[in-house]
Length: 176
Image 1: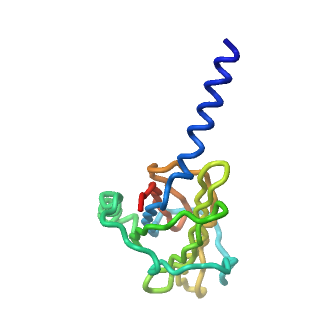
Image 2: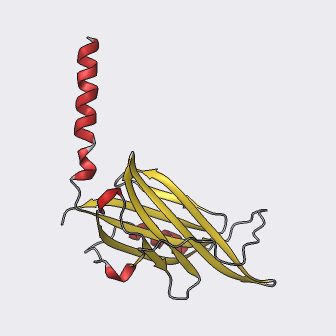
Image 3: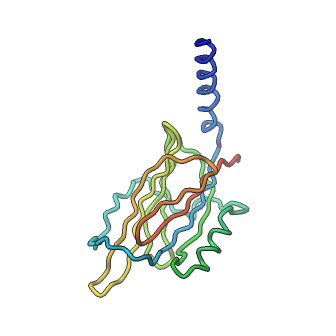
């Protein structure tokens, strides 16, 4: 009985791990929005604290998908006065060698949102995001930073939260 359970566990590990290896590319979709929610946190960042990767690639270098999956979420955010959508982007990104994709620069047209996103394969799939949102206040400019790395599941919708802005992300396998 114990040997049979061990054999099933081994088979599960062998057949689950290659799923990431069989993927040629990912479709990555992001909605980034500001939120006007009351909070008591104090933010004093006035200059960028992002450590930029040397192999950063511009978002425009990647193919756009034929369709997006978070359109309803974007529409719902746009209707709610608590949230202000900043951008909704999607792209097809090839799987990188060595377990990490090339980091992609994320920037809005105003230059108030700036940062990057990277997908990493290892013990599961990880989404690493480092974004800064600049806001003007009576004391000058304040920079809000969302720097997070988390395990994700393909095709699930993920929410990354900061008191001043948020990101809705979805990563799906894409066969080229």
